[in-house]
Amino acid sequence: MIRVIRLAAMFSTEPATVCRMTFSNIAQSSRRLIAARPLQSCSACHPANHELRPVLRSQLLGWRITCPLCGGLLRHPGGHDRPSPFSRYHGTALIGERLLDNEAERSVRTWTSPAEIARLLLMRRVTRPISRGYEPWRFRVLGAIIPDLDDVVEQRSLPTPANPILPLHLRPALLAGVAIVERAGPEILRMLRGQMMGANKARFSGAIDEIITHTCRSMASSQLQLI
Ligand SMILES: [Zn+2]
Image 1: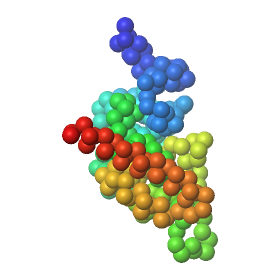
Image 2: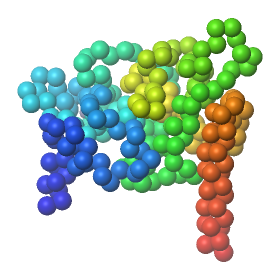
Image 3: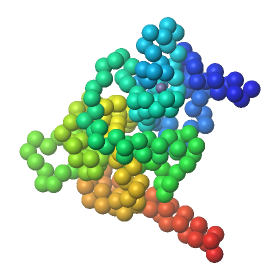
């Protein structure tokens, strides 16, 4: 019975139904990265000439760049693919994709939530010295880790709180950023705090203090268990 429900949830012509049926088990922190409408598709598993065009689960997942069925690269559903300027980060982006996927689908976290790292990396940062023509929307914390980002982003392609999902051609930068922060550990978050200012810095600090406190508690508790 469970298998039947899972199969029914994988293929449906109603995106809203897919959301209700398929994503109830997804970690809370990952849910904002699930789209209501298809963002992408795999040209091998979801051919464009398929008459019914059922929506696959992977089409709605804002942390994926590869198809979970065949491993191929996902593409823009309308065929309007833009080459990613971050292809040299591909290997690192795949690590980030796996971290986010493990958290969303299997509730596996490392020292913190990869989805929370992704959220923090998309907050605005300040560059110093502040240049003439400074555009606050352009500079994100992620750009401190992946410097090419600042030059290639467009205002309409950057996520907002209402729409937190990056377009497919920019997503490898975020996934690579998540992998780099996860690998570096909590210290890198302290360092990134220096890139922020004002209320934004206060919000970032609050979030990372909570992460660091929680990480210390988890480490202390695992050490106690070893004793
Ligand atoms: Zn595929």
